[in-house]
Amino acid sequence: MQENISSKELMLKKIRKALLEKRDNPYPNLEDTPLYTENTEYPEVLFAEQLTAVSGNFIYCENGIEFIENILQLADRFNWRKIYCWEPELQELLTEYEFPFYKTDKDFDLAEVGITLCEALIARNGSVMVSNQNAAGRRLSIFPHHHIVIARTGQLVMDLKDAFKLIKDKYGSQIPSMISTITGPSRTADIEKTLVLGAHGPKELFVFLIEDFS
Image (cartoon, rainbow, N blue to C red; front, top):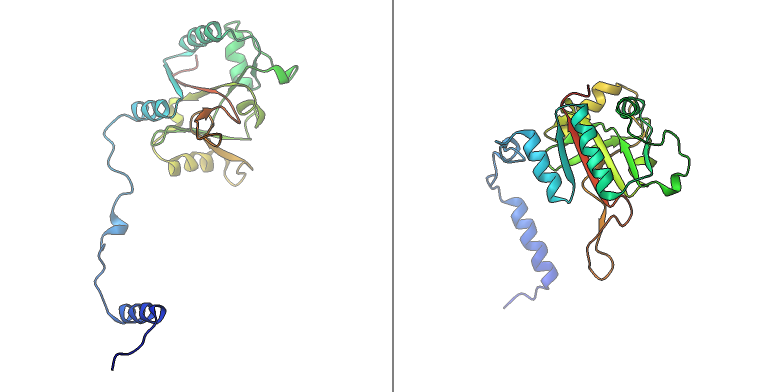
C-alpha cells in the first residue's frame, strides 16, 4: 500500500535525511582562497582603468605646475567661472599660481566646480574615499556639477580594507562621522530604464593623482 505523503512532508523528509547524512565539505579550501584574482598591474594603472570604466576622469601629474596646467585646460573647456575650494592646503597651491577660486560659500547655489582632497583612492574598483573631516565637508563633493578630487600617490591603495587602515592610522579613535566612497558620477536608470549620469550629484568626476604638490 502506497503511503500518501504531501509534497511538504516529502520535502521535510528529504531535509531530515540530508541533515543526518555526513558529507565531505565540497569546498575545503574556501577560506584560504583569495577573494580577488592576483593583480599584475601597477595600482595607478588599475585605478585609472576602473575609474574610466565608471565614467570618471583620471589625470596624473608629477607636480603642482602640471596640475595647474591641466585644471586651466579644463576650466577653459567647460567655461568654468564659479570654482570653490575650502581646503587650506589646496587654496595655498591655487593662490601660488594665481588660479581664481572662491574661498567662502558666497553664491554657492551657483557653484559649478568643487575642488576637494580625499582620504584614499581605491585601485580595485576605481573609488574615491572621502569623509566630512576635511575642510570641504560634505557639500563641496555633492552639490557642484563638477567635482575635482586631489590625491597624493601615498593615498592610492589596492583595496577597501587598505583605505580603512589609512583612516585608522590618520584619525586613531577619532574616526570621522561620515565616511563614503565615490565610484564615478552618480547614476540612475529609474526613468524608462535610461541611464542618466549626475542625477543626484556631480555630472563629472575628475581625479588628479599628484606625485609632488610643490
